[in-house]
Amino acid sequence: MAGFTVAIVGRPNVGKSTLFNRLLEQRKAIVDDQSGVTRDRQYGIADWNGKIFNVIDTGGFVARSEDVFEREIRKQVQIAIEEADLILFVCDTTTGITLQDEDMADVLRRSTKPVLLVVNKVDNQERALYATEFYSLGFEKTFLLSSISGSGTGEVLDEVVLHIKDEEEATETDKDGNPLPKFAIIGQPNAGKSTLLNALINQERTIVSDIAGTTRDTIHTHYKLFGKEFVLIDTAGIRKKKNVHEDLEFYSVIRAIRAMDEADVCMLLIDAQNGVTAQDVSIFSLAARKGKGIVLLVNKWDLVVKKETNTARDFEKEMKEKLAPFTDVPVVFISALDKTRIFQGMEKAIEVYENRNKRVPTSVLNEIMLREIERYPVPITRGFAIRIKFVQQIPTAVPSFAFFSNHPDSIKEPYKNFLENKLRSHFNFSGVPLRIFMRKK
Ligand code: GDP
Ligand code: GDP
Image 1 (cartoon, helix red, strand yellow):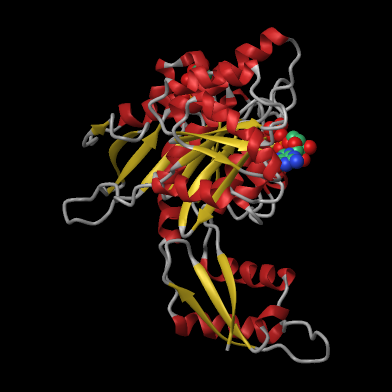
Image 2 (cartoon, helix red, strand yellow):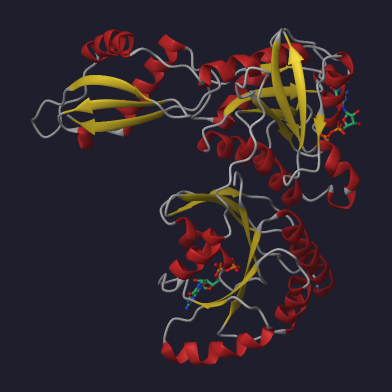
């Protein structure tokens, strides 16, 4: 199931963030550092026995007052129930069951989504004995574990992946049966997603259908432009109905992740008035790590006073500094309201889709890349010459390249970056994350 999402909830200090890191192991998490009520929130991608899923650590509320705290926690749990596919409810055996635990348990027990109770800090046998009191909270699936040592986490992961169904989503196809490109419109609340969607829809008369209410919480609109048919995925309309949560970034992020998982290319709307925010950066890096194509649409450009000729260039430069290292991404300055350059935005999305599906013939790849490598060879390490003899694009959804070498492990990050830049400069992979592998020949 694309985009299976696990939310970790629990009161502060029970070990959510430790568990999060444990579930992701060495994979780097993306931390969304927001100041204010919430502590850093983390999003990550976990892989257990080949099953991939999103994990969100819902963060810890810094209790400013008991009142705010209770309310925020409730809201958080409620959203996790609505939006996630599975919930890990974390408690702490060293404190026993607290009133807050009981409160949360009450809300969670009413959920129709699977909830796994995780009793954390069970570091030894003695604590396992005490931990049994948590069975009284009445969750069918209760796990005792120690996030610090990792003991018991495997069992939880085994249970989580049981809930991920293999069933393929019905792929939308054209009349010849070819899969249609899927573009997701994502961005923070108020970035202009609905306005853009309406602008696109009202101008085009060739919309085939609107499919809402599938198992996903996204809307799929079939759309035709420049003789090409594709699917627009958005979450904007749905959010409007539940605007109680509008202000909560957790809500918008979890929605963006959903749409992203279903898409080939993400059209990320940036509000020109705010510039790139920390949340934009986390969404962007998540999309890149998932190997999605990306187009940046800087919206509300009509509001930016164009006194200086370089405004767009400066804006783009500043934006890319924040998004580095992945900067080979098209940027279009649009106004969804005035319908300025919105079709240019779509055109770029189509181009990125095509770049992502590009297959470079092996002969061309070797001719060009081996010449580049000859001009700038791998630096000599520990006295032996490192040679790259052959390059091949691997047939995967995300463009990936294997370089065959006599000492693949000695080729370091800077040289891989050099290879990636050369691939980009010769073959136009604009908007597409690339993967570079070193293999033994
Ligand atoms: P969060 O606020 O729920 O995200 O909690 P943290 O992950 O920040 O953990 C709170 C404290 O509990 C930290 O000092 C952790 O090192 C500690 N902790 C987390 N998991 C365990 C565990 O399995 N055993 C023990 N003994 N301590 C733990
Ligand atoms: P969403 O939350 O991302 O769906 O954002 P909306 O489409 O609801 O837009 C939020 C607000 O920004 C609304 O008041 C829009 O009228 C306004 N807005 C959207 N696009 C533009 C734009 O290009 N220029 C200006 N000036 N305002 C815009």
